[in-house]
Amino acid sequence: MNTPAFSNQVAEQAVHWLIEIQGGTLDHRQQLAMERWLQASEEHRQAWAHIQRVNQRLSGMSSPLAHATLQAPASASRRRALKMLLILGAGSAVGLGMHASDSLPPLLADYRSPLGQRRRMQLDDGSQLQLNTASAADVRFDGGQRLVRLLEGEMMLTVAQDQRPLRVQTRDGLLDLSAGRFNVRRWASHTGVAVFQGSAGLAGDLLESGHQARFDEAGWSVRTALDANSGAWVDGMLVAAHMPLAAFLEELGRYRRGQLNCDAKVAGLLVSGSYPLADSERILDLLEVALPVKVRRFTRYWVTVEARA
Amino acid sequence: MRSAPPVLSHSLEGLYHDHHGWLTGWLRRRLGCPHNAADLAQDTFMRLLQARETPVLNEPRAFLTTVAKRVLFNHYRRQELERAYLLALAQLPEEVAPSEEERAIIFDTLMELDRLLDGLSAQVKRAFLLAQVDGLTYNEIAAELGISLATVKRHLNKAAMRCYFAL
Image 1 (cartoon, rainbow over the protein chains, first blue to last red):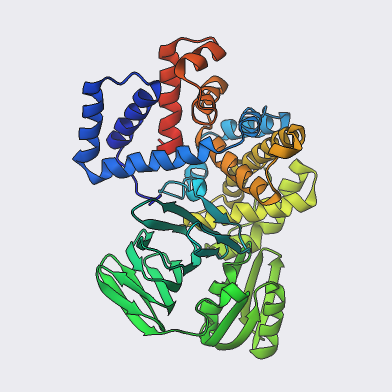
Image 2 (spheres, chains in turn blue, orange; image 1 turned 90 degrees about the vertical axis):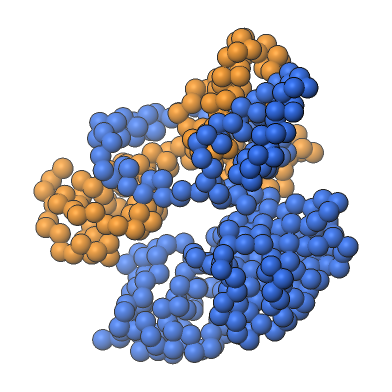
């Protein structure tokens, strides 16, 4: 996982070992001490694995690009902006939400997709990984296992047959997948899984083909038959079958920049139909035709859907 | 700053309604570009949205400009990085230049790295890149930067805490 928050102490120890090992001056006694440290706790191992992962990413980076970009000189405009900030001091607003994320950035992930775009990747074993909008995943294959970590967003995984097990890890737990086709999505407090083919196991408890469910630390919950919208994004579609408008707009909002609001008065209206995600403005226009709503655009990034007067 | 009208609503939507146009104007005067001003005004409200709690606002416009200044600052930084990045890209020989798709991802990664390492000296950043991107030994880094081995280690330690653990 890319997201556990490590304690300061563990972070310091891990960095200490990194600096010593890279210095190449570790004697036999110190090597043993390092191994003992690794074996002492799962948090140690995760912190170490995290460093390795970031380093792997950094070492594959173009050296001239990295040096030139990070040494970019401060422009006069930014110096002026900085001065303004300092004059204002550390007012409450500066601290407010500026460090909204308490987890490590998924930016150093192997695969990412930008907002509003999908990406498709072929993996070494013949499996296929597709990322939906604003998503990130790490892929680690070795002799013993195939591991895919979903760090952010949503992916469709078409798993090829192989002797090694294929596991998917999210913040909520570890899945064992058979060969088949699976949609996995991270929600705020759980992970959603849809099985189109094959089966997904969670600590031995199987979710079979044709079903979807969510899971968290407590295991599976809300098992149902596949719904029409599961995985429709792969074909660039948003499919609604009696979906409440608020939920529909929340889905649509994942593919757009800015804020898409829903007035409480119309939140419960039901939406049905297949909508092409490529043109979300047109979907909003269609809503005005299909439902008694009006789309108010304050700016192109702040849109509210409300009752038609 | 001229006196602002009283706050009509404490919700973010109210804040948006009442002050969005004004904030866009404020940003436009600083940027001299209406298109960017609209984007940055949006970013400012997005930040407030992500903070989840709207504070009690006696001085909404003072509050908004404080947040907007931070947004403006990041905007300038992004421009600087982009300029340096494109310049370096233009100088790369064709055969080692990244593909169109890789370019955006490398730039995103560098933006993130820049944010994590923000505030560290140029020498600390350079030592870190030489170690982790170029794979130089500590002796080579010391020679390259003209500093002692102990300083190299201290630099790397500082940068590593930021880069791996945001500490």
